Image (cartoon, rainbow, N blue to C red; front, side, top):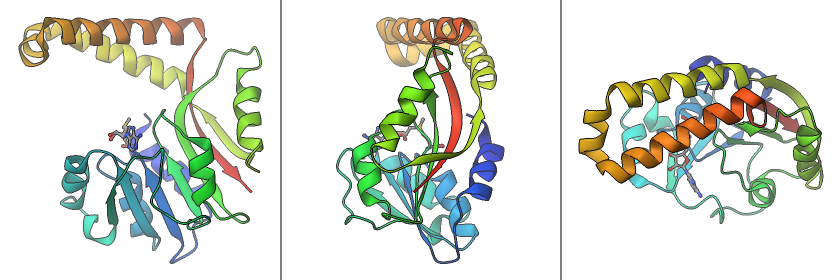
Length: 201
Ligand SMILES: C[S@@+](CC[C@H](N)C(=O)[O-])C[C@H]1O[C@@H](n2cnc3c(N)ncnc32)[C@H](O)[C@@H]1O
């Protein structure tokens, strides 16, 4: 969500010194890790799917990154390994991401589903991170962009039904369509949102 421009926004705020250790958890093809490595960070891209990492390694800048297949629920790193921990993904595991970040002088960069309900959800979200010593440094709501993206995805799924149905089967297709329809509805009524956030401790 937000594409390369969102990654740049986070990079400008991540306080990554040359040689600093950066973790991209849930990296997919490691776009953020490759961008951080291009700025001189020692970047690690971690994902549970090895094929995504293999594809990322083959992309531009991929050889400058370390690629690790693991589950973000149990990260294979010692406490305090990273100066900057990134998770551009909505399955976030606060305790584990916090454990591998440096105790002080660290940043945490998130691009995720974030409460946007105006009923205290965002405060509750931040309070959970505060339990691990993080405070919000920068926040960029992306809910409108996310809503536009989900609407486009839903329209494309409908327009290209024969293609997707042949590939994933009728049940798989309908499940995905239901999922997108409920995302669109949630974003329209403001009970879910998306944001970039940089936290510090
Ligand atoms: C929405 S994509 C994020 C892509 C990437 N961060 C980006 O910005 O382009 C989610 C990624 O998280 C990975 N993922 C989901 N759950 C995970 C987990 N428990 N541990 C590690 N990776 C996970 C998925 O395999 C997928 O590649």
